[in-house]
Image (tube, rainbow, N blue to C red; front, top):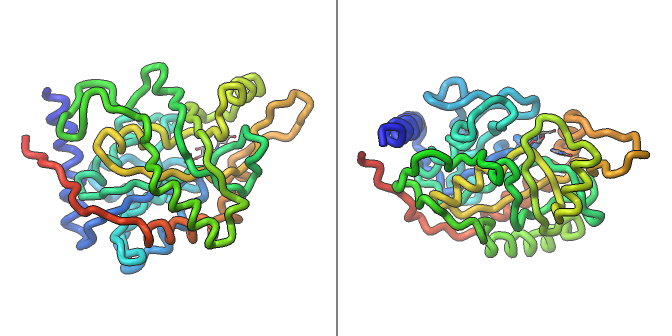
Length: 295
Ligand SMILES: O=P(O)(O)O[C@@H]1C[C@H](O)[C@@H](CO)O1
């Protein structure tokens, strides 16, 4: 009980501080993946805060994750954008990596958009393609590394939340429709994302295992954020930018590296930006998403 009380207090302190520093009251939150931080540049009337200045916020340590929270307007919707996320492999607890999602809930956010860089295991997904996440395999979660472990705060959500349907079907359909209109449908398809712990990329045996399990793309983030978002009732949409093919052949000498991942992010930044902007423009918001935090 005490643990729940302290955690809620931390989330409220951060949310209250942010609300005292900006007049924006976001309806949509966006988490930018590796090399995709430029999504924040589309916001108008920006208020931006370095993570190091936000009480209770963890710090970003990964290249390509600037460490800034940006509030602003986009196509008539108020948004908040994380330029840089927190990964388990940085040494953060899962509670810390997902802390911003709970803060977003307290700020009144209704929809969470998650983006990431990922390696492809599917023949149909090439570097530069964009995968709409239709489901995920949370490998750390399957062995008990879950941000919802520990006492449950019923104010956020139930002890045993369902995860089927955690990537909103309506938003997925809308995104495919938008891709057609933008003339980029050939780059886009739905697929299953798997989160591994990282920070090393996969061995060939691990890559083969993931392929056999039906995983389309693999990365090192996102699933814990989506679990926490779904737990607290946020609507979720997710995109993986495919930055590399995952090597499943011992004869193949090519290996993936983080610089290559960031480079593909730069090359596709404009398309990802267009898709997310149109999606936000066309999504409906219900604006009734607050919770009572009184303890
Ligand atoms: O934050 P994301 O999931 O986009 O970052 C991916 C996974 C690793 O952090 C990094 C590897 O290059 O990119």
